[in-house]
Image (cartoon, rainbow, N blue to C red; front, side, top):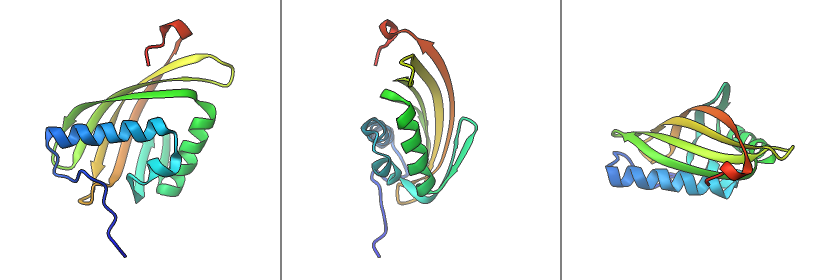
Length: 138
């Protein structure tokens, strides 16, 4: 069985950390839970707000549920800091709920990667802000 790898691999440089962040942004904006899950280890550990998600199967279920509820989802990530195998990002995304109200979510994520470039840990702190449609910027 071939070893699964997700480039770029750690240790990260500023260039490769920025590339990793952009790849994550692109994947999440695809709203394809299976595609997104492939960036994570099979036994990945997440804390997303107050929810704990463990393993790719739970990632797929979590993201499928998320994007059923969050319509017109658009995300922007920004590199905040990096070290050998860790990256910190700040992000914001906008979405519309089932009732049609708009929100902007702000947050920070801390990522830890294994030597094959797969994310093994993701810790996200997120706050939602109600906005009007005219306040949208993404």
